[in-house]
Length: 193
Image (tube, rainbow, N blue to C red; front, side, top):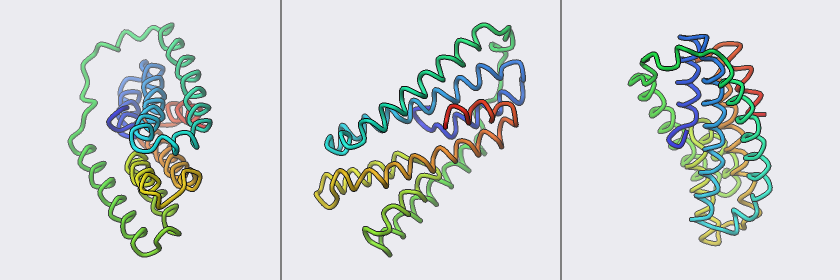
C-alpha cells in the first residue's frame, strides 16, 4: 500500500476473485493499504509544511483511526477463517496492470498541471481532484509546496488535499468493484467510507 494503494486494492481483488477462500485476507490487505495512504500523507506534510499538517490533523487522525479499527476487525476475522490457500503461489503482479496504472497517473498529472496553468489558484481544487483519480500524494506534495512557498495558506490547502484524498478513495472503490467483484468490493468500500 505504500507504493500504490489503488494497485494494492486491485491485486487483493484479483486474489480474492481467483481464490474466494482468501477474501477476508484480501479485504484486510486492501483496507490496510488505505491506512498506509493516511500515514504517508501525514509524513509528506510533516516534511514539506508542518502548518498544513496541523490544519489537516483532525481529518487525518479520524480517518486513520477509523481505517485502523476496521482494518483490525477484518484482519482478526481473516485469522479465524480456514484459509489454507494463503500460501498458494499466485501472480498478483501484472505488468499490464502496472503499465495501465502508470499511464493513468501520468495522464492525471498532465491534466492537473494543465488545469493549474489555465485556471491558476481557482483551478487548484479541480486539478487536485483530477490528480487524485490516480494518486493523492502528488497533489498533496504540490499543494503543500504552494503553502510552504506562502502562495497558499495552510487552511486554504485543506480543501484541495481532501478533494484529492476523496477522489482517490472513489478510485479505490471502483478498483475494488472491477478487480474483486461484489463481496470483496462491499467489504472494502465499508472501510473507505
